[in-house]
Amino acid sequence: DGGITQSPKYLFRKEGQNVTLSCEQNLNHDAMYWYRQDPGQGLRLIYYSQIVNDFQKGDIAEGYSVSREKKESFPLTVTSAQKNPTAFYLCASTKRDSTFTDTQYFGPGTRLTVL
Amino acid sequence: QQPVQSPQAVILREGEDAVINCSSSKALYSVHWYRQKHGEAPVFLMILLKGGEQKGHDKISASFNEKKQQSSLYLTASQLSYSGTYFCGTAGGTSYGKLTFGQGTILTVHP
Image (cartoon, rainbow over all chains, first blue to last red):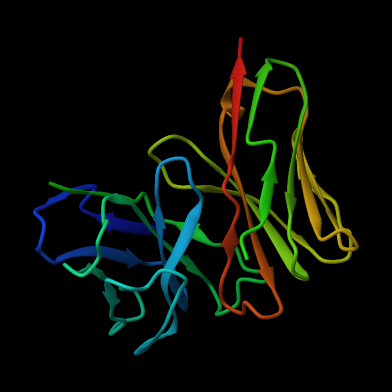
């Protein structure tokens, strides 16, 4: 079955540590996205990539980094520079590089907690 | 700029109807609706394109008023499974490749 997988489901991190969240898709989608969701709030865009080896900052990119070396993979690193990283992180993808008409499909999410 | 959803929360009994609105101050090309259960990923409901198109399936439908830059989601004869948080995501001319999501509307359906 095609879909988006994220791992791990739950992640605990000590302050000052960098952690990497995995996102893999086998839908053959061109574009991939990372969102952050805080309790009771909507989704905020961190980074997005429309093509391999290229990505753009979203609305809240500070303290995060990404790479897009393969079409199916878009890992997100939460660095120690991110002041309040505890949140629910969602990865999504679309078939083409436009969200005007394409459906965004979401992965199951990773819940990150900083201890 | 983030679209504004109203109301923030709705409580219904099974069989009742609800309307959720999503308004933007920017010109929109499309509005995407999602439903999210607690701790899970958002699930796609439908996309509305500019032109005032109304779409729907089963007892959930939506409209897009281009003049008002507003979309409305209609849930009729609600079921327990409709409970969750509903989000609208908007895409406009200057946001190519990005969706901007509203803050969400919490819908609770009781037996």
